[in-house]
Length: 250
Image (tube, rainbow, N blue to C red; front, side, top):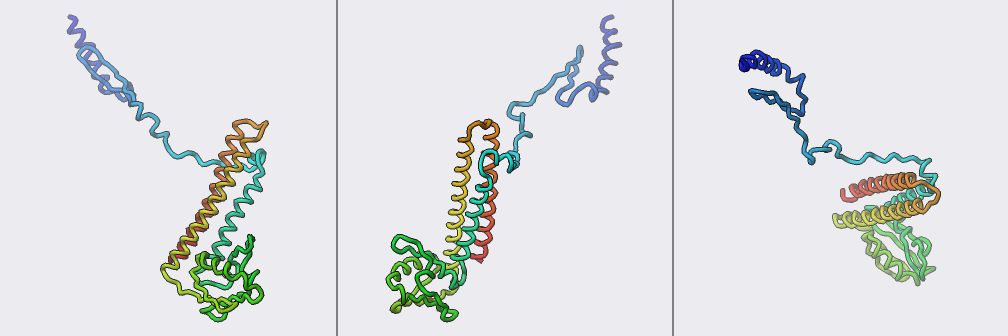
């Protein structure tokens, strides 16, 4: 009797469940039939699988100038970073010309008696012809040894010849070695600029953290924004360097 009753009730029920599993069972469950009962078993993700979709790069830091200004002098911060970039660009123009120009030699830094001078302050620089530059020290001959040192260490690939109080500087041909030397100098100038901006960044983050009467949340946010702002300037400097590097190596 009981077996007949089970057949009359259970079998139709199983058929219904088979045809309706999409309504009764969730995606994370399995439907199991047995002769006497129906079981629904839920499966769970392993710990290592959880949160996979949440992983990714951190969100971009939004820079709020007004917020930063509450803690540090943001205009001065930006000005110092921009000055570092302009200094690098100026150094590129003066020292990294493929053709040695009169201007690059005139602005060459010379250390004499503990002070730094531009060469044009110590001598007269004249381009005699397309292949030769003449530096005249008639009024200041005692500085010639220091000028020779400065020229040899400048990376301009120049080989001056002294004749009395004058230096004759042959303009070198553009060789692969010369290009590589200039590219190396460009990288050194870029690194100098980048490190200067990192120093500025760290200085202002320290200043922010020393402020009193400011909430920790604000200080944390401002520190992140200062870091992000300085990184933007560093990226700008890197872009300028990479363009110059490509120009130099050809």
